Length: 122
Image (tube, rainbow, N blue to C red):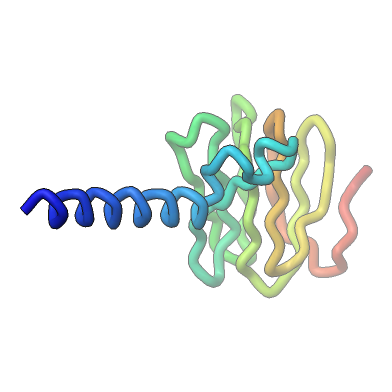
């Protein structure tokens, strides 16, 4: 009986380690190397913003514009649409279709809008 219990503990420990590493939560992850590994769950046809504290996700349907007052501090922005989006905040940037942008210190977002040409105001 003792070897069965030890075997179960080993399997649980191995599964937990595999899950942790698969989620990028291990100490050897990119986050430990100074890179953000934040992923915002996002359905096709939406731009999704995840708050820096992980408590809030905002989904913006393709073609729609969103304004935030006060500005939202996002950990990551995922564009699952077929068009470019512009993020206006402390630093303006473009988010291409299918891409995720993230910031270690957060991305301040006051406005998000579609940009069919892929260009955004400076």
